[in-house]
Length: 460
Image (cartoon, rainbow, N blue to C red; front, side):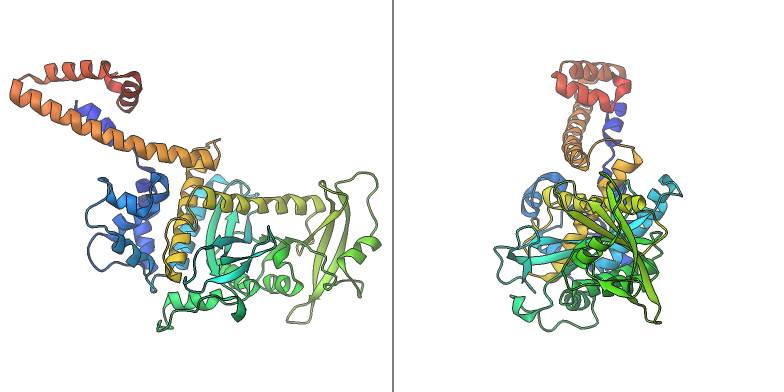
């Protein structure tokens, strides 16, 4: 009987293990995320972290018998609404620790590591009074919707993607902001700094995020992003930080690139360069300059023209690392898809923009950080176990595991009571009790019997 109960107790809760292996409690306190009284910060954060895997919202989970004592709805929202919590520092500390301690040892030293930046829509269609709510442009539909743009910077080695920091952007234009910033916030707090940042241009915020990542000691030396950020001024600022850029270009007709002192738009440049013969994937490549740095030196770049398989048109990629071949530029830029997978997972499985309905801007940032933590957990499970399953499959597997833990705890408790009753009331010896319990297990339906025997194979 003791072996069966030990088998139940040995079922590892991945979320609990993730919390302690990565010292999340320590990282939270280093990031000024604190609780003054009541239930511990560790317990509350683990509850919020596991919320997406339970299939319940916060209200239903707190109403269930599994909810820890002392945790109420107000308790959770006080933590999320804190203006003092530095969620950016927390996510940066966590991601850096995971990359250095867990992922880099599994990555070949010759593998190129990259940073990837992009934004996604954080919709709040039905909201009216959410702090700093804005009309933001949806790139997919071309329309303006209510919500925010979640600018994210992440690290990738080609196998795993780790979100390092995020910024919840409102709008830099007053006319597009539908709700004001809350008054009376101390300007020294992290919450105030994030609010001011949300009203800046996305390119300015991106440069600051890259600088912060490099200060944290990132091993990446190439930054990937889409054409929405591909402006020469932005690329020059990123290059001044010591980071190379690989990005898609968009032919606006206003941006020019110099070749031997002559300016060309992207379309004009394609007409002038010499094309490769036949049905080559790479149509052409050319060295250009995109202006001058702060010291007056020209900033060199390589533009690669690629055949667009979906149409008869062409695509253009730019790299400030001119030592890369055209094929290497294309291969590295292909990793940008990793951040699209992250956005898809965050919205479809990890409850981004669905879990909490707070009007506080601090709660939006805290919730988005929780979603990033869940994604890092899934990436670690996939990478460390060499798991061939997709992240979506791993998400459902974790949900099933949480349900199985509930079943095993109930069965362990039931068998414990049964053993005590047989010992005290009937007076059977230890060997007789174990024989009866073994017979009881054998008479269970097959699904229950297999689940119990898998947890305690010594009793099978």
